[in-house]
Image: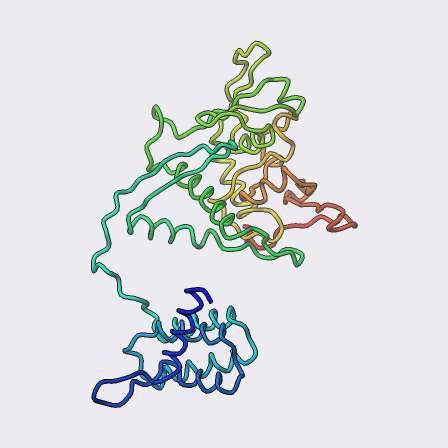
Length: 348
């Protein structure tokens, strides 16, 4: 028998039997109902230990009748369940009996100096490391929580993103919303812009990679997605690397066009999506590199998730004869190829 096993048996004995006392009645056992079930042979050692660990964490301020009622629940569960299930039930019991948990060691939380670091990982991915004060943490989480809710199911398919991925998308939208605010300082009197450069051959042949200012190389696909955003200025380079064009007046969506898209689409135009206008960007239906024009009947509002979906999947979008965007799903989703519309936004 190992020291650990011996210690567990000793704790078990002390918990199941009355303890010694000096000049008075013996101390009552920690787990009398568990002791009865053990005497019947209804539960084993690992189950007993799981119950004892839970009972030992219940504060002494909890009334005895509540403790015994909780123990009875755990004992009944132990007759048909293993230690893991008992531990889970024990955590729920503790949440009910002691919702405040253990008292903090310090009455006042430690002051935190906010820190933020931009990180580039070995695999080339980028990230952030941050330490936040309580107020900033609460404000940021309060802002992101409603933005990170799962999308509504479409065709019975639920949002497959993990919670971390949903918060990642929410943070992406959050940064876009904040950087487009007129209340934030810009660069040289302009709103914040991002410069994307790639060779003319790569642009036309849909190959190679682009260079994102302040970041480095990115895929041509990511460059095309970024190029749909009015805050990105595309720079196309010739074979010798000389600038041929840094943006075009018709490349970006004007304020008047954004208002028109707001009235027409009301938010993300993808079927079943309820994302509002501030979290959407204008997407060129016929890509700019394919000579698509920046005009209303070649633009559609899309949220971050569905913007990427259009670029990475077989979903197709077009403007119908009545001027409303329609989306055609891949054949594996709908062999009939019936176009679909978003009916969740009220249009005026």
